[in-house]
Length: 125
Image 1 (cartoon, one colour):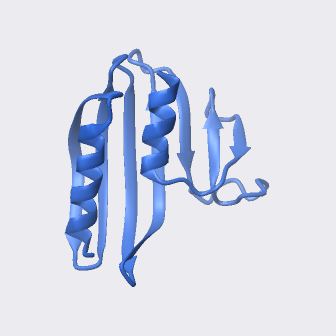
Image 2 (cartoon, one colour):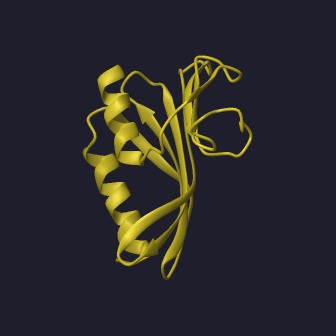
Image 3 (cartoon, one colour):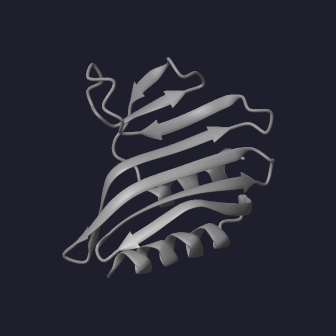
């Protein structure tokens, strides 16, 4: 697998997700076994999900180095964000964590993949 294959997989799964009304590519780069992507999804309830990953393919496996999945209502109200930004060392799953309902309400969270986020969003809508 190369980076372009992974990007194609992501777009396929987004296109098949019933919770997604439409999506736009904000940024997308692939260079051999490394890449990044930032997509903005409009969901069926008109909320927005902005998804970002920086990744590397190693031994045909995707290793996500940095990620952020930010969900907000159609009027811009924060709902939830999963990320691994290194700014909450007090969290037991550091650097992985979840902002729930407010930017400053942070919970431990295991590393999460974009497919899991699509499943969570689908169940929550």
